[in-house]
Image 1 (cartoon, chains in turn yellow, orange):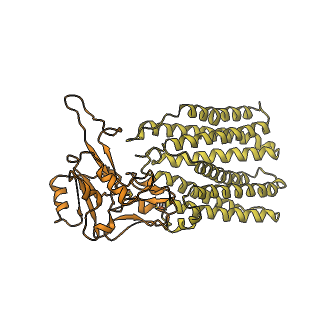
Image 2 (cartoon, helix red, strand yellow):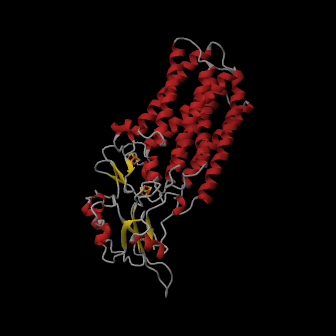
Image 3 (tube, rainbow over the protein chains, first blue to last red):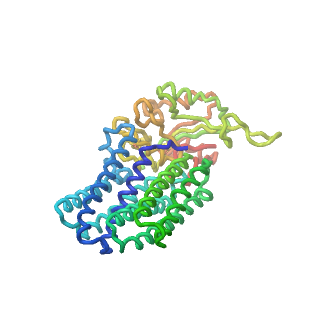
Length: 270
Length: 187
Ligand code: SF4
Ligand code: SF4
C-alpha cells in the first residue's frame, strides 16, 4: 500500500476546493443572481480565501519533497506533469491575485477573468489528474477514470462552497436553485465514485488491493448520501437555507477527505 | 534512443536464489538502509522461497530484478528536474545533486526500480555499474553470480554474445506491454 501521505491529501483537497470554487463562483456571477451590492464584497473575500487555499496547497506539496528547498528544480523538465502542476498553479495564482486587487479597489471582477481563470482551473485539474494517470506503477490510479474522479471531486467541492456563500448573502433566488445544483453535483459524484469502484474491481491487474470497506461506508454515508438528502430536503424547502448549505459543505469536505484516503490506500505498486 | 545500449540477459533456469548478487550490489555501493537496487523474487509466489505447483511437480524458481535501463524510460520522461537521465551507453541514472526526492520516478516505473535513499532523501538506483562497465569490466551482480545466471553486454550490437543469446534462447523482457522497451531480458 502506498504511504498515506498527508501532504498529498491536503494538496489534492485544497486544489479541488480552489479550482472547483473558482469555476462555480464564476458561473454564479455569470448567472446574474448575486446582487450588485454583495458581488464585489463577496468576491474580495472569496479571492482571498482561494489564494490561501492555493498557497497552503503549494506549501503542502513542497513539504512532501525529500529536498524541499530544491523545489525550483521541479521546473527544469516542463514536459513532466509535476512541473505542469507548478506552472498551472502559478497561472491560477496570478489570476487570483489580479481578481483580489480589483475587488480590493471596489471593482467587479471582469467576466473575461472568470472565464480565463475557469479554463486555467480546468487545466490545473487535468495536469493534477495526469500525474496519477501516468503513474504506471500504480494500476489503481493509472487509468482515465482518475481524470473524471478529479473533476467530479472539484465540482462537488466548488458547488458546496458556492452554495454556502449564496445563502450567506440571503439571496432567496439562489437558495432553491443552488439546492438543485448541489443535488446534481452529488449525483454526478455518485456516478464517478461508482465508475472508480468498478475500475478497482474489474480494471486493476497484477496487484492485490487492500479492502477499504469501513472507509467506503463512511465515504458513502457522510460524503454522498448525507449531502444528497440535505440538498433534497433543502430543495423541498424542509430545511432552512443556511443550515442546509453549511451542513452540506461540511459533509462534502469530510467525504472528500475519506475519498482521498481510499484513493491513496489503493496505491499498491506493481 | 542512445546509439549504444547495454543490457542484461538473466537465465532464471540457472538462478538458485542465493542472493549473492543482491548482497554484492548492496555492499559495493553502500546502498543505504532499506533500499536494494537489486533483488530476487520467487516466480509465482509473493513469499520468498515458497514453491508453487503441486506434488509431485512443485516448482521453485527465482527471478532477479533490477532497473531495466529501458530504451524509452518513463522515469526520465516524467522526472520534473531532469535528474533522471539516460547516458550515451543507454544507462539510466540519477543525479542526486539535482533530485528533489519527489519519488515520481518510482510512481511511473512499472518495475519499481528507483529506490529512495532515506539518508540523503533523494533517489538512488542501479547504475549498471557504470564505473566498471565503461572500463570493460562486468557489473558486480554478474561477476559475483555463482550460477552464472547473468550475462551483460551491448544489446545494440546484433553480433554481440548477449544479442545472439537473446535471440537464440527467445529471451523476453518483463511486462513489455508498458512500452518502456526494457534492456534486461529473461529466459
Ligand atoms: S526500469 Fe524503471 S527506473 Fe529503470 S529505466 Fe525503466 S522506467 Fe526507468
Ligand atoms: S525523485 Fe528525483 S529522480 Fe525521481 S522523479 Fe523526483 S526529481 Fe526525478
